[in-house]
Length: 485
Ligand SMILES: O=C1CCCN[C@@H]1CCCn1cnc2cc(F)c(F)cc2c1=O
Ligand SMILES: [Mg+2]
Image 1 (tube, rainbow, N blue to C red):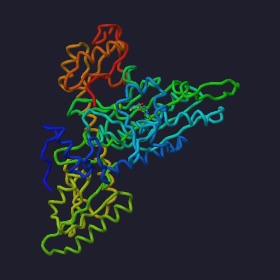
Image 2: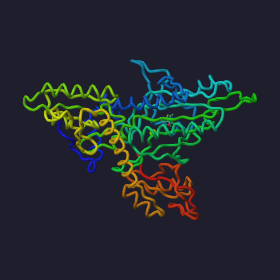
Image 3: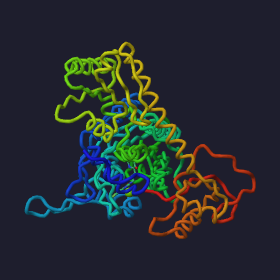
Image 4: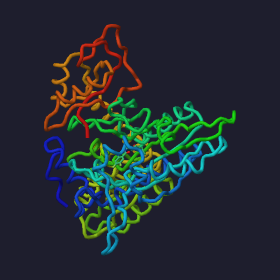
């Protein structure tokens, strides 16, 4: 088919909307903010799910499934965390022709669904830790501009909900899960992220503290929350009376966490690696890692070429590489090259008469276009090597791009200048909430206000006497600021 009509560096928004469709990941749907996830996207979700599910099972976390529907009384139980979100809650009000007695909410998240049962199931310290996860969809009827994968009214996620006897256990799990989220981004999606803590203003209001992995999109100069791991403290335990009899026979409230990553991960990967020829998939998450294309020439041993393609696919698949051949005879090799480049397949193998005669294949990398001739004899390990090198190159390139966007600022003028230059800003901050609110007010505009993204765990040196860029008060910590999704 034809190439993209928008260029990534010229019309990022249009480029993104087009590439997710041309790459056959998304089909637009007749209800705004809802998207069809086609197999090319779903298989990426499944690869991430397979990794994460195995990892949480090693941590003795068990999968469960709770109902989609939430009764209003229960949803509104946790006042301060829901009131801000009320406009996003979708409600079922009818069945058939008749109105429901009481409208029923569709889960936007499952704290209020689960925690009445946590209260029922947790009696003594032997019932702890209780650690559940569910893979499901959630609905949030947002009105800000919907974007496939990044912001949709329904999305897939996993949500973990755990309860412990002590804060120490909860604190430890928060970071264990955050490390898994870092691995999802950096080891699978080849997307660099910063681990850090959300400010009091940006954290989950119902919790004690929120940790996050923050990504950054250079093209728009916007930060994006990649995944989140909250310590809820005992707030929900108090509300839902989740108590237990500790070893001293005293009644104590549990300490809880909740954590999630979503299909947003796929959008961040596309935005990071995609180019003007289409998607670019990191091999670790590529549905098809190698596509093998026959290049017959007149009648020169066409069957031999086809057999060589089939044999190549077979030996790659037998070694655990996801390979497939494109034997369709109604498309030219050239058409197939563009098609599989659009779909972001990391490595293409071409086999023509010359390759056949020399007992080799021609490998072409999607990330940098490099072509190498590989002798059939050591096909598998050379292909494995190239795929690893593509994975590494995508990550390093993204890391360098992101680092080039980071601007350290010390004053307000430097801050606003960096913001206008679409930078990811690292600034010393007094850690006072009204200063953070003031920055939001002062930077309001049609591009959206600047906000804190996170305070990185990996804090640079903060010299004595360093002042907050916004208030001039003594700075307490380095914090990432920027516009965000
Ligand atoms: O972010 C997570 C991890 C997984 C479990 N939930 C937490 C906090 C979710 C925060 N949140 C986020 N969005 C919401 C939208 C709503 F419409 C609503 F009623 C409630 C919420 C809401 O509580
Ligand atoms: Mg939201």
